[in-house]
Length: 200
Image 1 (cartoon, rainbow, N blue to C red):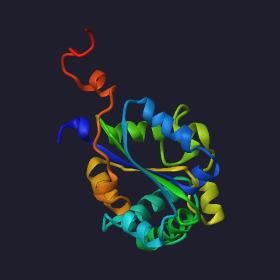
Image 2: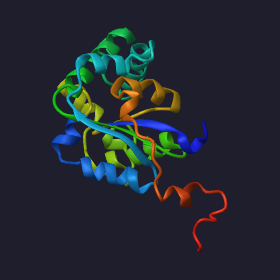
Image 3: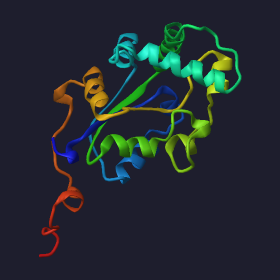
C-alpha cells in the first residue's frame, strides 16, 4: 500500500456530538488534505465498544500499568495493585461513556493519515493537550476530574494509534461496502509527482 492510501479511524464520541462540534472536527481534518472515505452516525453498542478496545488482547494490562504509573507520579492513591482490575474499571467507564448517546464514526485516508489525525486531535488528556489541537482548544476535562468522578475522561474523539490498529478497528464500525473509493481534485496537488496537470 502506498503511504497516500493509509487509513485511520476517528470516532466523535457522544460529548462531541452533544456539544455540536461535528462540523468543526470534520473541518479540521479536511483542511489537512485528508480524504473522508466513510461516515456514519449511530449509537455504539456495548459489544462494539468491547471489540474495539480489546482488539489488543493485552489492552487491559497495558492500560492498568499505565494508570498505576500515573497515579504514583501524581502522588495519588492507587485504587488497585492489579493492572487487570484497573484496566477493567477503565473499560467499564469507556463502555458507559461511548454507549450514552449518538457518536459519529469516520474513516480518513491520505499520506500519514494516522499521524496527521493524531497531531490535529491532540493528547488523550484535554488539560495537557497542546493549544491548536482539537482537544486542547475545544474541551477542558482532565484525568484528575474523571478519576474523582469515577468516569472516563471526556475528550471528544477516538483516533487510531497506528496504521495496524486502524486496520483492526475499521471493520468493527464499517463494512467494506460503506467505505468509498473516489478521487478528489485536490489529490493532484498533494500526490502527483510532477504537478503536470496544472497548466493548460
